[in-house]
Image 1: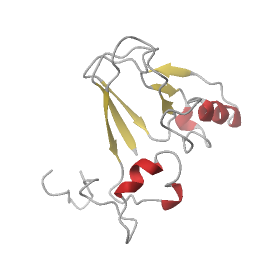
Image 2: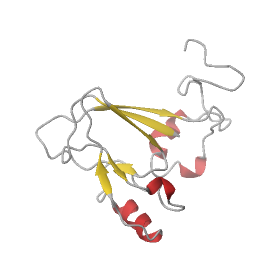
Image 3: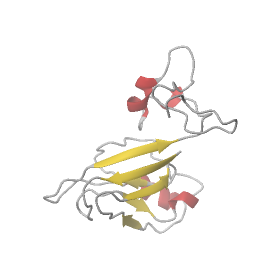
Image 4: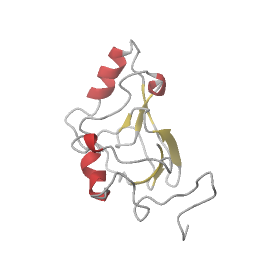
Length: 147
């Protein structure tokens, strides 16, 4: 999966802007955030542990972009944001793109983003419903009608 994070307001370090751990996309283990994702007590706990497990120096970089600007990242690259401690808004629009062959993994529904996305799962199978996850492109040329 990859994401496009679009800032609706100018972002600054200390203002809750997204942060990335440099090099985390190359770590063989622990770049993911399967634990609590939204407002955990220590949002850097997973990346700190992952850096240690991979004998990597932790280097966190704030992603500062102007309103209307964006940042693309792969879902396995560590990313997060701390609290907005500024007097400015920190609003963003995030678009996630995954393979048209992606399916739900029900074992993760109780952790990370599972509670958010599990509400879109169908009862009968693990297919992702095109009403919620439209297909933008597939090798055979198919895309969800209306796109």
